[in-house]
Amino acid sequence: MFTISSAVTAACIAGMYQTAFIIGIEFVGGQWRVWCGNLHSALFAVGAAILCLMAYYIRDWRELQFVIALPIAFTLSYPWLFPESVRWQVSNGQMSKAIKTIRRAAKWNSVYIPEEYLYASED
Image 1 (cartoon, rainbow, N blue to C red):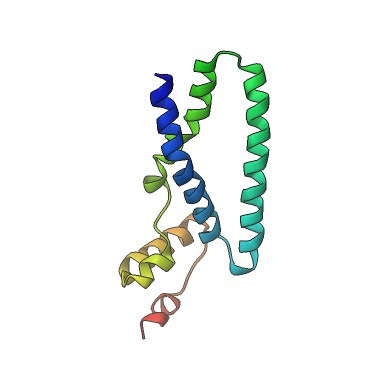
Image 2 (tube, rainbow, N blue to C red):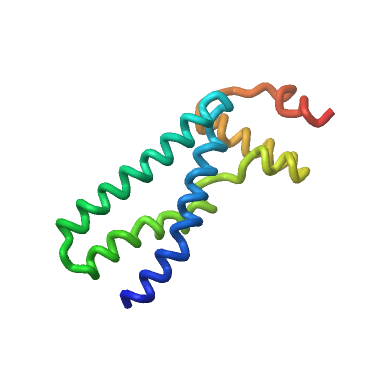
């Protein structure tokens, strides 16, 4: 069981790190991307320090491995929790999906976006 959970954790950790980084960069404005990337890297270092504390207090390796592998379960829900990037949709010619994503984000943020703004880039 230890070997299997270690292999799953090792296989997923790189994708989890990159996915979180890309999602963080995609959802902030251009002026905040550097800060967001630096914060993400700093939080990774903080997480490594917290892992040392967790290993000190959780002495059973099975429980520690379970606690370490638990966040990976949350990343499996990313495709359903987070929409595709509007930039990606537009660059792949999926304008109707991009407009739908923008409308959903506007509704979530209680913001009104005039229709002429949504279709301005199609000209």
